Length: 419
Ligand code: ATP
Ligand code: MG
Image (cartoon, rainbow, N blue to C red):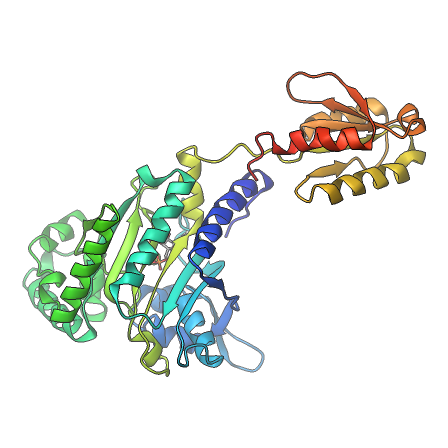
């Protein structure tokens, strides 16, 4: 688990802001969910035989002897909340959530034990239009963040639970004939979770998989039609994609459409967003059959990508640093700074606290990264004015009354301010 320090948090806010703006622009509403759920919820949704439930969950007993887990993903909790509050009763829902997820994994660049996701879920939509909407929505985010060039959309269809079962049997039958060529991990998975073998990064296993049966050949008629329509919709909007029959996703609950946005720039941690359809999950968790689709963005990886592609905006940590030459003037300084903050809700104005010599205060102002220093000395106070001194680039020090300062600050704030 890691800390996000002040030097990175501005970029985080920028990326989160863009993602949330795009989601809102599609008419989705926020749902805020707890970080802890009953362990049983994840066993029933994510699936007993998945890596997540088998070995990645942070589970513990609380004082009432209930088994609880830190959420490893957001969809299960979202479905649980919708059921609990009757949100799926005779209505559709388009929701999003943001927050930390927890998985006990081997930490490395782009893979952490606590990581942030922003997730989107739509309930009650059976057709491929909503799948397309989700993909277009994510593409819009990458465009606005300037990282589209680094990303590829990979698509697959898992069909229905029945056809998936048939495919699984065919896959296992084939892999049994070449069992000795598989890596250890894949051999283990042959009994427990054979679909995950398709994910293997092992070269030799991949060679074996090249001749394995392909999921898309097993699709039922309706799933095949759904997939064709989706591809057609995406193409009609100029979206480029590759069909990758090896995409299975790590969770048990997916049906039909699955997709991932991947990049080559983050090593093995190449997936920055994954999603798809999970038409049987609501029923599996005790609700009425409700079609559903969604996706989750790995925000840590997205921020890394924006940083690596140098698409972050220049963000000044603060706009102005307020200096007071005499301790007795601090009350006046609070009045001035209060008025300015009220006039400019986005203004980042830091007050020098703790007094000290003027020269030292000036040095602090310089180090703060502020664009200007505001100075209140005896002369200024007598005339009911404040001096403003540019700290970056040229410009003279000016002594201004409130109205003139307000106008001056308007320019300071708008000038190259990304956050
Ligand atoms: P991976 O194959 O990289 O383990 P995943 O399939 O387990 O990813 P999902 O469960 O689909 O991931 O979660 C959606 C997104 O969340 C991923 O595409 C990824 O960007 C991000 N993510 C998943 N696990 C982690 C992690 N441990 N640290 C950081 N981001 C993660
Ligand atoms: Mg994983």
